[in-house]
Length: 195
Image (tube, rainbow, N blue to C red):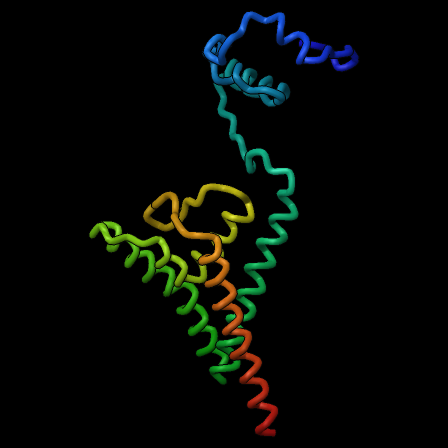
């Protein structure tokens, strides 16, 4: 391996000296740890753990440069969505305990019902992934998968992958949050008119 202070030559020049016609000519190391590129310190930790017959946990989102910003964006989506839905129930129902119960049933109850219905639809062969958009929890999870650029894997039943267009996801999100916001605005204007 070249040292950091060493001047590296242009790869377009030295690649011509190699006897490689296709990628099949390149030898791939048998051990998985030898296939890792650019993570020498991590490879050394894995080798040391293997020598000592210990375990290593690899934690983190793979190849994600803007993780903190994405976490803040996702947190903003969650907090704004739940706040608007909570305000909707608190303005529609005058009793706090009933409003909290209605919020809980709307958010979590709908998620459970929709997952069971989704599983029944898949078992019957009529499955349509768009049913998941009716649940606020699933909708926000799908938006989170878009933000983090990861493959969706969710539901209590371990179902993997969804086939929903971006416009459908964000259209339903804007429809739900926008209608809740309009309802809260209308309720406030009605309260002011009754003063």
